[in-house]
Image (cartoon, rainbow over all chains, first blue to last red):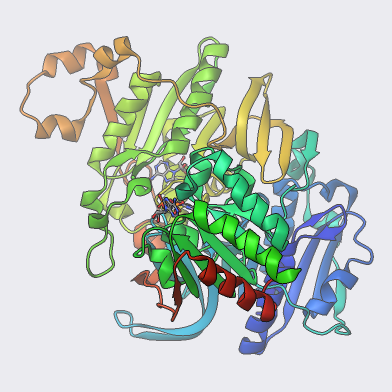
Length: 339
Length: 290
Ligand SMILES: Cc1cc2nc3c(=O)[nH]c(=O)nc-3n(C[C@H](O)[C@H](O)[C@H](O)COP(=O)(O)OP(=O)(O)OC[C@H]3O[C@@H](n4cnc5c(N)ncnc54)[C@H](O)[C@@H]3O)c2cc1C
Ligand SMILES: Nc1ncnc2c1ncn2[C@@H]1O[C@H](COP(=O)(O)O)[C@@H](O)[C@H]1O
């Protein structure tokens, strides 16, 4: 009762990174709250799935296994979660801010009248005092997210309704094994008792899933370009540097909107969140929506011809100058010093 | 037999073009400094509705918007582009609504207006980026939902077929009507205003707008009833006060902060060969690269 729950997204038997990241976060919240971490797997052929999630600190794994539950459709998954949550009364329920989580979360929160905060960038535990009602609360979930197009950061709470629900984008939280030998309990769900025929009203006629071609998220070095790169041709300079130092190329939205780079390279609030060892920002001014996706990088180098570009505030190294001049030199001296 | 379609559309501040004056010194948003626009994905939704209307003779498209009096602008804009009529859901009781209270009010309003075959929403509104209202309305009306629609392929014989665009793929799905569909920005752009319709509907007004303006066209509004934009309130939709506005909103904003970066201590370099050479050596020696 009153534990932390994470909904697992599963594609072809593999638990999605975003779910594992949430398990890591969920584990630390559960430790803080002194409660258990439970995970919910809804799909088909789930045998053995526990091996993927127990090391992340899952104490209880609920499994709803039925051929009709994979691939994901809204209503059967929603119905199972709603009924399970009514029974188990979680205090916190987390899911990915993905195509699935953002389809499922609102439906569940609406049925439970629980409230839901989309796209959180940080989750913390804290108290709250409602002076007007003369009430104090402890151990609430602070659901922290950018608002208003990313121009402000808001901390949202649900003082009175449970579960406190939040979605988080892939890459925002860190994924970390809790204990390789951690084992939890498996609790199968009697699917037939939960879902009815009407839940299967929407059916999938055709489905094409693609694996993302660009692997920016897992790259430890990122060379990112902004509007200041100036053209698609100039982006080649970034690809050249990335190739010699073993990195991937990312981009700001302004660069993508201008057609200099492809959409799947976008870093930021509405793109991918990254935390590489080295982030080289070339011709990026550092607007908050971009910074939201890269500020956790260990080392940041900014190459900008404007000494006052906001990104310089974050940079460990600021190179004041034209990227057209700097990038070839970086390649040249990297090669010279590694020979 | 035509379809009855309702489009949920919201007037939003244009957060895409936030200038320096958009934020007040205390970190709150200066709404007055931002132009109010038709939420972009709601225009994609409207276009899908209008295509259905063209495809199935006798169909009607109704716009429903919840907001302050000036949100009537959204309904007129919708009419210029092809919608038949619209309802403005407006009441002080809705102030402070989060997405759940908003969905509750919208779902009650839909029940009040009538029966619909298709309820089309945008995927998300740019002022909150939550993408919750569509699915929450569906749940409140106990209807199925299809999210992230890129193309409503057909809606006939009680069945709707939709192509959805997901993060990592595409899906074609079908389901029974009535159905709630939310539309992505990757769907076709909305057609522009039609000049003839602009002339036809430019005097469309809510009762409040008519009372506030001095022009006296009483005869015109009784002759041309389509120029009446209907205004509905919490009372009309028989909303349960506990589920409306602030009291119907489980989520509360605890704090709002302007974003300030912690300035790091950084090394400042020029572009000379020596400086770049030094930098690369340093990165290699401390194993950042190489
Ligand atoms: C709701 C919302 C979501 C958003 N999501 C994202 C997001 O996910 N990701 C994102 O990136 N943005 C996002 N944005 C957009 C963001 O606000 C900025 O517009 C964008 O990040 C700016 O990109 P930029 O820094 O490349 O361009 P600019 O701000 O135009 O900066 C270009 C920089 O290049 C420098 N420069 C120019 N020429 C040279 C040269 N020759 N050599 C070196 N430097 C040079 C200039 O000094 C300047 O600093 C979002 C905006 C909104 C409203
Ligand atoms: N006040 C409103 N009036 C009408 N439709 C709305 C309103 N708020 C949200 N919607 C609809 O719900 C969608 C998702 O909104 P949101 O959950 O706020 O991102 C929007 O694109 C609209 O179609």
